[in-house]
Image (cartoon, rainbow, N blue to C red; front, top):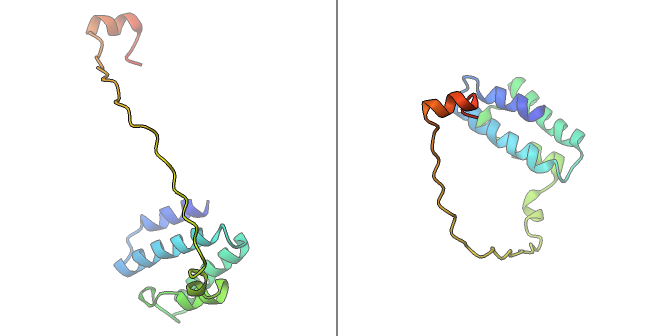
Length: 115
């Protein structure tokens, strides 16, 4: 429902800065959902929106400081060792050629449609 609401908001007539930052805010929300409780992530989102609505910041100002308050310093987290897993791809096989034909008018009447 949250994402559905965001998609609706992004369809509105927004300024370039607001559209860009709402996309980024949406990404941040869904990036954090797997690592933090939903309530914390929602409070982060709420804090950003309320700060903008109160006139304390504009969309172009970003929200890195609020992100650090809720989730800590993300720079130090990115220094963690990352394990890369390589997956082998299956053998490539040629796809068989398929010819799709539409029914003739007579055949369409016999079978009751084109489904």
